[in-house]
Image (cartoon, rainbow, N blue to C red):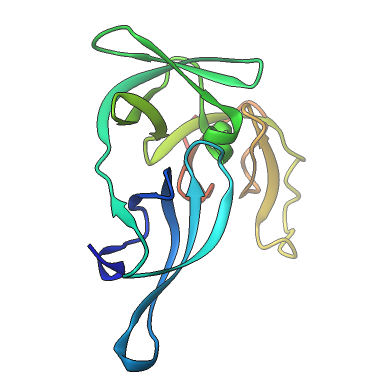
Length: 185
């Protein structure tokens, strides 16, 4: 397996650790040697490192097993999940969860990704519905801000919303980029 097999979002085992490929650029050096400029996120620590990989580097792409989980709660810097089929509970640290914490609501269904029976990360649904807890009132005719204003959601996430959205509304948010999609209620 070589650097040409790498893709953004792939999980690799490199130097005894599991990483997700966050960014990937494939290049050729002199004499046709393939090189990949990557940013890798360590699945245990959550740290992102820049790494140049070549075919000579010892890494392998790993397949992660998926299981349906339910998010239970957050306490003491740990996020707790339950397997929906076996009722077994799993824990991830705040570093492992990263920015996904801004989209998690209790009892939410997520996908747990496992390597050799151990949970390594979760995947969220593409969209989530979150309640707006704070936003300034929209001013009619205010086009300087492009028809958007800041809003703080129930999980602490701050996004831009249209001027008509008010505190108490529920909005649909894209979990991939934190973008407002629509008002639900």
